[in-house]
Image 1 (cartoon, rainbow, N blue to C red):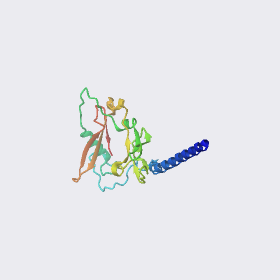
Image 2 (cartoon, rainbow, N blue to C red):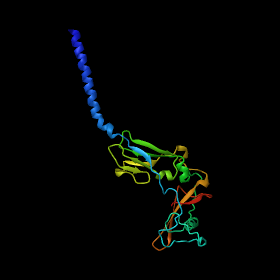
Image 3 (cartoon, rainbow, N blue to C red):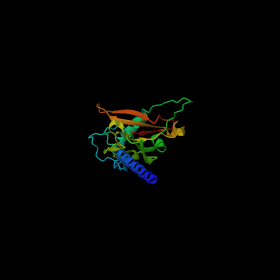
Length: 225
């Protein structure tokens, strides 16, 4: 009789464990379903490679470089002859002096990209989702990625060449570089200043500079078009 009671008790315990396990799985099912991270994919950008614009959207191109007759090229289609933009940049380029003890030296975009990772982030996942898109991306790579769906039952698509998602919950980002590179580079040939020239309402050209810092003695100027 005692043996039968023990056997019956053992069966009840096993049944109870089965019921508890089933309930736990049912409770977790919605959460597990919500944690599906979505799909990371590449979207080739047809405008990533610049091509000469044969017909500008502007009737008259602004030209401040007289010797461009017959060669008025406007690759970025902004209504300003490209060589004019370069001429302005070289004429008004800033001169910046760094102290001998400067710890944060300039660099350039391509130098930085070869030391980072383009990745996707979603803080709706548990743990937060960090999905690598491409290691050492090129500038064109930054425009060619998308992530559809995600955790918390979202179904929209976030693009790497667009803004962050609603509520800034999901986004593409560039990872921090290693500590050894955070001080920039002492190779002044890699110190590039980026400039932006644009038409103003006085039929002229305004010009501004931006930098991964500033030009060095033998640095270069590059259009941020």
